[in-house]
Figure 1 (tube, rainbow, N blue to C red):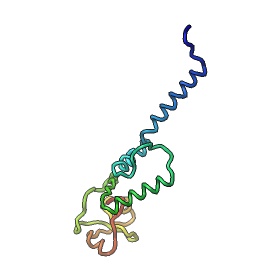
Figure 2 (tube, rainbow, N blue to C red):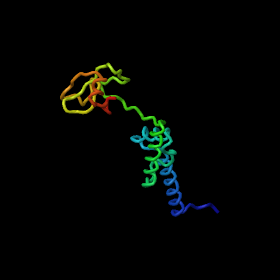
Figure 3 (cartoon, rainbow, N blue to C red):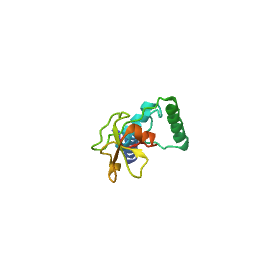
Figure 4 (cartoon, rainbow, N blue to C red):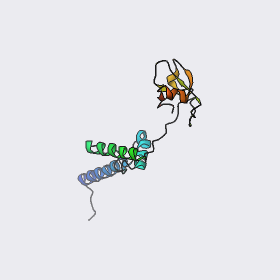
Length: 139
């Protein structure tokens, strides 16, 4: 007698395969989250399992706690974003020219998008003496 595949067993096989494929797709972060996920794994903030799984408040608090631990221990390495067009990456010496605005509290590199309305050249040391801090976008 030949084995017969019934509709029910064929349906169960399709569901089993679909479940396996879905589980496989959940083991990698989405494209938009890949860099952040890799960074968090590298910092030891997450173990890297189940990137698309449900996140509980306990998990969020644990990640924040681990992040703060590494920051306070000086072992946290933050990713450096790509600088905006026209902004030169790299360190700025105390005497190098930076730019402030009429109303802001940050100093900027030449080419920063936040300098569109005003751009006042000043040395970095003078800007810091006056209480300005570096722009998070261009520094």
